[in-house]
Length: 485
Length: 82
Image (tube, rainbow over all chains, first blue to last red):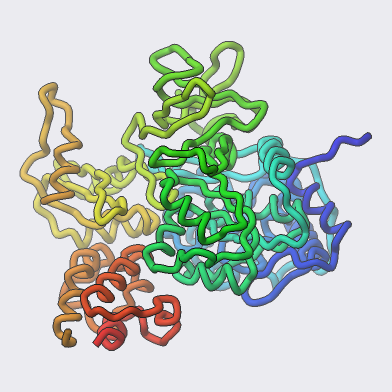
């Protein structure tokens, strides 16, 4: 018997064959069938073949239109990898990413072509410019599926190339562990530049289900969106549900049709998970965890009645993967330490830079997550914090050092230090500087290079930075001052 | 609560954050759209909305309130709660 393939394009094409007339995506006010999305993505693949030559990566502008969804499919079908660009990120950031990934071509709406040219793109196409003839169905070219960028502590975003085999390993686990059907309607909350969107697209299309895309500014209308679209499969960061709770919309029975829910990207508080279970009484709720480097998610924990801790555990690694806790050189199967992961979903490394985060031990390749965990005797992982300064803001990884590095050239002899601050239950950033300066031009420089979620709420001037007994910068004192000062 | 008090409550939460979008206090007018300008993210906006509900004792459905034109401007919020 032929082994089932979980390659993302093979999954999509199977649904095209089996249910061509069913809706594949609802976006921008209309539905597109599998047959329509198939045809559109073949035209994009034909365009890629015609213009890309040997180039293995194509940028896809992540505006929420059918072009982006067909674009991702088309790039993959042409045997290339896609590099998603967040529509709200500044062109200077796009430029940095595109340069690092050696991308010269992009699929994007016409109204952003001029901006993309400034960011270094030579060849662009919108829906209107596509060839009419469809090309080929699925070429096995690049081993890479996409390149996603995360915050880098040295001041530039860090590219993570993710392999098609790694994506297939993820899809195999999720598509066979959880039951989905063509009747399902999936949320597509995640930005396409966030790797959790890959789950949205390909788990949905693998099931022959409909992907429901809310408008870009729809965070506050998520509840009415979910009910209008009759959502059955929910996937978001926990803070999206916390927002609904603050809006007093997460009432018991508020999401009656949802039958499967996933959370990922940040710690899931147990009381929030329980409130969601009451709002969606027919749903199985699952907490997923995994850095981009290990492909979408790699551990899982079903939220059941037995859980008692304040935060839902990260759970156990997917079958065929290994999790260990590292203290010094030693890798242990229980206790506290840095979580390290191994297995088929672990990627090769970063774009154009080596990193000690990827290492070999015991004949296996491992990725060190930087997350501090406790592994209990049953092998269940519990999140404790970070081993470094990285901060999570609504699921986004932020290296405070990246913000400080952008400010540094403007401060003369001065220094910037950014710290996370907990205010009214939400984490935000505060940046301290040790020179007297007008904050307006500093914020302008940050806005030119960083996404909005990385902007600190405040810039605070101090005479000098506090230091501990060993001369080390006392971040705790800064956090204390930003919280109460 | 009168309009002045509501505006003061809004400015308490907006003033500091508007700096990061390049707006000095004098630039912050009633027409400023708090969400579109990026001065507040959706979480901070919801917090402001809830604080206004608590302060005025008015219980409004945020989702339907937002569908009104200009509801996310400072002037729109003042109008909504006064």
